[in-house]
Length: 253
Image (cartoon, rainbow, N blue to C red; front, side, top):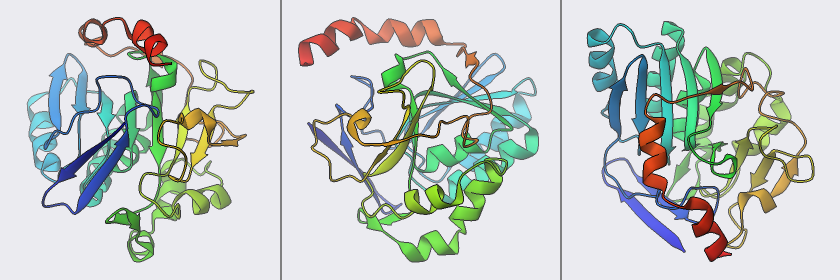
């Protein structure tokens, strides 16, 4: 099944294969990002539509206790906003953690954390960060990739650990539904591998775990800074909405 979400005004069409790398029930064609504060955590979920920077700045003025940003089930979206929010978080020295999936512009916000982690809100197979280039109507925009200096930006925010040749590959994936997916290298492995490069030409029903294996982990490449698990402050609420996830997966197979 493919769900198509069109976000007007930001030139983005997100084609989501609901069975690929995402928890059932998490794919929502929302038109705005949800921002909420739970204790010391700012939890961001949904698409990046372009108005989040001002909202985030206001929240940070009102909530001085925030030191952690949880990025949850976001397909990405407005690229400039992702960069600017990420740069703000790096300046503040915040830690970031992925809850569910965090793709495209969201992944750049994630990479901007001073320290970067996985959560265990969702099962490991549905907890991943996905990177690619810049796209227009679903196709690579090499002009935008070059204009944003995306390769060097990624290497910088990975604290110099990202492999330049591998970054070059993933920022030039031709189709917008293609991505490199990073999973927790201890909690999820397939044949000893936890990183997978998808070109977007794979069968719709295929799992990201069936894409090209990359034998470097999220920790090796500076995508995360630790394999410690961060717990979201609203984890009990998240898990209560999942229902019998394992049963749903078994039924689908």
